[in-house]
Image (cartoon, rainbow, N blue to C red; front, side, top):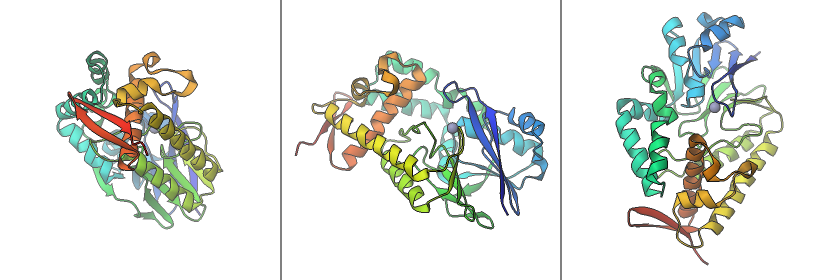
Amino acid sequence: MTAIKRHEIPIAIRALKTANIYEIFSNRHILVDTGMSPETIPYLEQRGVDLASLDMVIMTHLHIDHIGGAEAIHKEYNIPLAMGIEDIRRVDQIRESPESFQKFLMSFMTLNGTPEGILTKMVSHHSVLDNIGTYKDIDFEIKLKGNEKVDDGISVIHNPGHSPGSMSVYIENDGKLLTGDHLLPGITPNISFYDENSDMLGLYMDSLKKTLKLEPNEILPGHRDPFGNSAERVHQILKHHDERLGQILLAVKEWKTAYEVARIIPWSKGRTLDSMNLLEMNFAIGEAISHLRHLTIDGNAEKRERNGLVEFRSVQT
Ligand SMILES: [Zn+2]
């Protein structure tokens, strides 16, 4: 018998307010995700969590609101930490050289048309660089590739898209799926870029279809409340991206940069790129890039580099 307990911890991200940490009791005692900071320890202890008895901590993905408490738990209780190998690789690159990460962001976003004034502010307040202190020393002992059994009837599933190494935890007997930010209620997970070439949106849509095939009974997401109808939610998100792809294709009848596209297309709640704060702007430009890249890989758009800018245009058929 597997029992799961959800701990909803406050986080310092205004749009989300809280993140979920899950405790799995089976043969082993497993924690999934760790909140945003070392404050996770007193928070969980107050709720009666016996951290010393944990066998393992799994982080669904590399974002700060999921890994922020990990190193503190590891240091204090010596619990092995596990995360997707692709995300670990990513964290390793950034902590080896935050300067190269910053340089990559600057040159890549410039290439995609982001004006220098905005970009300088965006990069100097980038959440990854701002939180480098939390990332710096985490010892990821267990590097997950996907399909590993972490307990009897409990396995991890690789769901790339929101991040390259995103993992879901699947409790087979109960059909419960702990999705991290791969599948959320009411929020479309941000799909951006992690390097120059990977088709993150294509990977994400494949991961959604993989989730659909599992037919889980209950989704236990990384934010907000658990929910039942996973197929409906998957279809909503797939539809959202299909519509987005259509809007973007219309926006690139003439050659345009990803930044120009992000300024043209409609965003949720009637917002425009110019009215967004820097973090939202960063997400929006990233979204435009991931969709344009997918259209290009699928042969619906073409790409050229001219005068130091990457531009896209729909392929007229
Ligand atoms: Zn999150």
